[in-house]
Every structure is written in structure tokens, then in C-alpha cells.
Length: 388
Image (cartoon, rainbow, N blue to C red):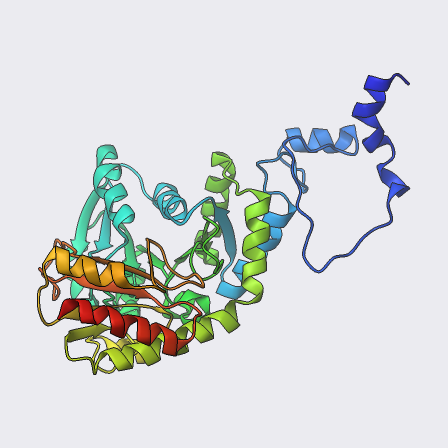
């Protein structure tokens, strides 16, 4: 056998018996576009769409399938699929379940890119969008039309933290055959079970807590039995896939999720309670605090809370003074996203289509990481002196 031929083919020719089977704690990472069939019979089955194995690199390589099964089991759904980002998971959910002349209800506190996709892209394809209140419940019935196909919820919203009455909304939806979708990234499946509340589709931004290290972009969609086949067919037709390396990293992050989330919860609650006693603070927007307007809904539906919340000040500070406060912090990085081990801060105002309890107010959003609480408190306390 000539050298060039040997270099190309020898790994396949010697793969059987060349290396003893190896078992590691985490799965191996596969990289490849072409997947080799064992024989012509398998190729024939693949051509007919009847092959049970993996046919190509876009056909969800093994590590992705292991990760998706772990998510499906965690969520308690019928089918889970991974996407290259959280917004990709959201966008493809809309594409899978809606079409021209359909009508969508979208909660007013939804993630900004979610709202922009609906308003700037879906509308171009004659999908109608109606915004419902951020703290909506059964009173949204008048918003429902004969062509309402889907209701999209985010509870709590990740900037203003309103909570929807999920069971009241899903009861209305089921009676009319409307699909309900929940962005459940804040609570994760550990602290909220969407399917137990009647939700049809649960979305996670794996970028946040499930990964936990701010080094990954990924999203997942998990659906119930009723819509599993529809979503599976859509995913296959679109040839969506998520890189094996990212699935490996996300699967590794899942191993420590319960421990990390518990620490995020405890630290954030301690800091949130402390902030309520700070003179210059007006409101602390944390669903687990009794002062939160939808605290009773949180108590009823959630089994825990995460590390993301916000606050407002009694005084509407000018931008330069607010900037001095934010820039003075040593332990809070200034940056988007959340759910990672490092504490983060952002500040801004949020416009709403419906009436908002925070209209015109600057919201300071805190992602409480895994640092020591005493150090984070001291950092914030020092920063507050810049506002005097």
C-alpha cells in the first residue's frame, strides 16, 4: 500500500482491535461531517430515511444526544433538542409552531431579542403579535383570538422580574388548543417544573446557569408528548445541530448545577435582604422577597430562586453619578448575561408596551456569583458612597 493511501485509510483499517475499549467519566467528543456506514444495507436504509443510527455530522453526534437526554430527563419532557444559543432556541420554537396568519401573545417582560424577533421578523411573514401584561394571568382571555396559535411567557422576566400566573394561562390555552411556551432560564428545571403547570414547551438558555461558567453559548427546547413529533421533524428538516465540544462543556456544567444554584440562591437572598435595609435603595426586585408584588405566585409555583435580581434607588441619579457607582465596583463585572460564577452588574431603563410599575426608573441588575457574600456586600457598600 502506497504512503498516501495508507495515511488516509489505515485508521479505518485498524480501528477494530487497535485500541482496547476505554471508559471515561465524561463522554468522548466526536468531530466529523461524514459518518461511515458499516455496509451497503445500512446506506440503503439511510437513503430511505429508515436508518436508526447517525447518518451525518448534522444528525446530532453522540455527545449532543447524551446532553439532550440529560436535559429531557431533568425537564421531565418528551423530547429535548440543543441549539447554538438561547435566542436560537427561541427563534426556532416560533418557526416550528407558527405560520402565516397565526396570532401570538407575547409577555411584555420577555427577553429583548425575543421581542425584536417577533416584531421585526415574524411580522414580515404575516404573523400577528399582541403584547400582554408582564404579570399576566387569567385576565388575558380578551387578548385571545380565533387564530391565536401560541402564548410566549417568561416568568420571571430577567430584567424587571414580574411573574405570570402560569397555571391560569395554560388552562385558558389548553381549552382552546393554543401552545404555551415558557422561557424558564431564571429558575431552571430545578426550581420550576413548567410541565407540571401545564406548559407545552420549556426553553433554557444553557449559556446561563446550566453551563455556569460564562464560556458557552447554547439553548435547549424541551416539548411535551403532544408536540414532540412536530418539533423533532422540524429540527431534522432544518439540520440544526450544536457543536460536540459545546455539548461536552454543557454536560459537564450540569454535573454541578444543584450545588452551584443553591449557593447562588443563598448568596443572592442574603444580599437582597440586606439591600432592603440600605437607605438609598427604594425597591429590591427579587421574587423570593415578601415585598415582591407576585411573591405569592412564586411561593406557589417555584421551589427556589436563583442569583439574578434588581434594585431601584429612591433618587433618580444622573448618568455621571450612576456611572461612578458602577465603575467603582471591584468585584462586579460590567457585562450582559448572567448565571456564571462571577458577579455582574448592568443598569438601565426599560420601556414597555403595557403599563409598567418601573416606568422611568433606572434598574440596577445584579448577577450574584459564587464569591463570598461579605466581600460582595462590602464592594456594594463602598460603591454606594459614590452616590452621596
